[in-house]
Length: 73
Image (tube, rainbow, N blue to C red; front, top):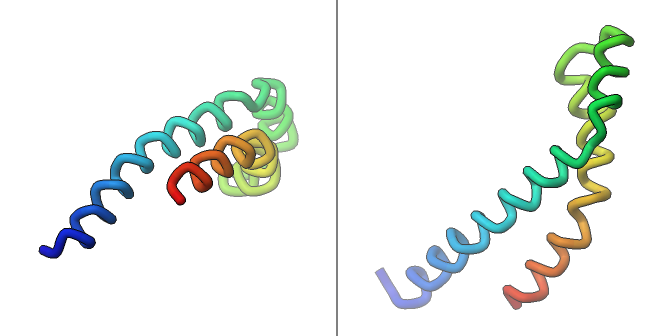
């Protein structure tokens, strides 16, 4: 493999661990009441994730991911 390919893969693996932790924290940051409300409304699991959990998690995650993108550049 070339040095460029190896470097891109190494940086990608390095930052993927950080972004995984950011996403995890964003999802865990959604209040438990939101999960309970989706269950009370009898929403399917996929709808719970797409309509309730992910929109809130993305708002929490966006600033941190922006910082990682800037630091990669």
